[in-house]
Image (cartoon, rainbow, N blue to C red; front, side, top):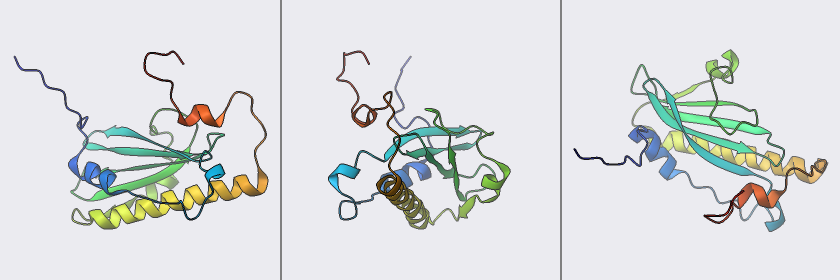
Length: 161
């Protein structure tokens, strides 16, 4: 018997291609002090044949959005879903993808990987800049339980959280 790990986590190749193309540089638009405000996490998304990727984009109070993308289960098209982030460490569930969000699902043909990537990058950039602008103008109530440094820097390996 041969046992081999699958480091793609069985994510569809089109979703992996898009994830590898995503690159956003906001250094010219935000200050070093603002960099801790927005967090982007990546998780796998499994929904039957849809084996894609979920990006969670949120602020230091865990408000933001999910962007889910991959190959559509009933065609070779690429889908992109956007829904409200509800502060969970898990990818969105069906109850998170409301009818309104599901009806706004954006489709791209299978060969439009670059177009889908650009669409996703635009959403990430728009969301990040909106979060930063809101933080700069309104600020946030101090929450002793949430420290920005703990949101971005995991503990060293071997140390407990």
